Amino acid sequence: MLTEHLNLNELRIFAAVYRSGGMTSAAAELHLTQSGVSQHISHLETELQVKLFDRLKRRLYPTPAARELYEACRQGFETLESTLQNIKGGKDSLVGTLRLGMPQEFGASVIAPLLGEFAAEHPALKFELHFEYSQAVLEELVDGTLDLAFVDEFARHPAVIADPVYREILDLCVSRDLLAAIGRPQHRREFYEKLDYLDYESAHPLCLKWFQHHLGSDKLRLKMRAIVPSTQGISTLITAQMGAGILPRHVSWRLHKQSSIHVFQARSAPLSNTISIARLSGRTHSMAVTRLTEWLKMKLQKASID
Image (cartoon, rainbow, N blue to C red; front, top):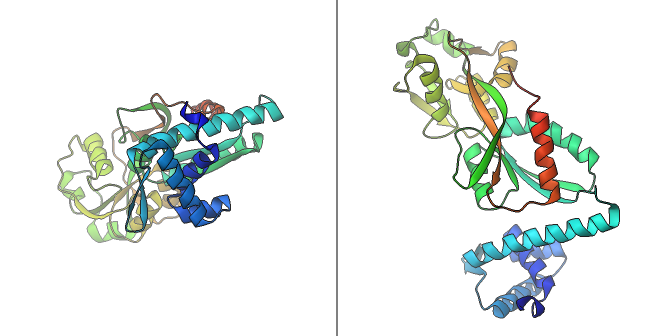
C-alpha cells in the first residue's frame, strides 16, 4: 500500500501549502522554515512520482493531481479530527473549520447572527466566511474551497444541489434628488429609459428581471453606469445619485425611511428572489457541516422579509 511508505506529516504540510497558496505562508502556519516545507513537498512528489505544483514566476499553481489529493486529505483529516474529538469529548462535540460562502448583505444581516447562535452551542467549531456575489460563491463551492454556499436563483451549476430556504423582495430604487431632476415617476418604458442604472453583473440580470416582472418586457434600452458585485456598493452609489438599482427590501426600506431614496411601486406583485443553501453533489461532509445545514434550513424557513 502506498500509505505504508508515505510520511503522513508530509500530507499535512502539503494540505497547508495547497490551502494557503504558498510555501512561506504554510511555513508560518506550521511553524517550520520555508526551505523545510519545500523539501517535504519535493520528497512527497518524488514518492508519488507526480508533480503537485507548477512553479511559475515565483507562484505555485496546484496541478489536477494536487486538487484531487487535497480533497482526499481534507476529508480524511476532518474525519480523523471529528473521530478523535468524539472519543475525547462525547458524540455531540462538533469540531473543525466550516467554510461558508454567501452574498455580502444577506450574509451580514441574516446568516451571521444565526451562526452566532450555532457557534455558542458548539464552542470547538471555527468558521471561515466568504462574502462575495452569488456566482463567485458558486464557483468556489464547485472547486472545493467551500463546504456550503448561499446562492440566489441566478446562480446555478449542474454539479450543485440547491435547496430553497429564503425569499427576499427586490425593489428598484433611485436617489430622491436624482429623481427630482428627471421628473415625476411614471410606470412607463419611456420614463425608465431616462435613468442610468447600476447592477451586480455585466449582463444586468436583476434590472432586466425587474422590468420583465413589472412591465412584461426586458427589451428596454438600459444605460448601465456601473457594475458593482455588492449590495452595499449599489446602495452607496444610489444615494450618491449615480443611478437606479435593485436592492433587497430590508435595505431599501431602511434607506427609504431615512428619506434618501425613492422606491418604485408597481401595480403588480413584488419581485422576489429565492436564496438557496447549496452543496456539491456527491461530496462527503463532516458531521459539523451536516448538522449546520439542517439547523440553518430550520431557522431560515421560519424567516422571511416582507
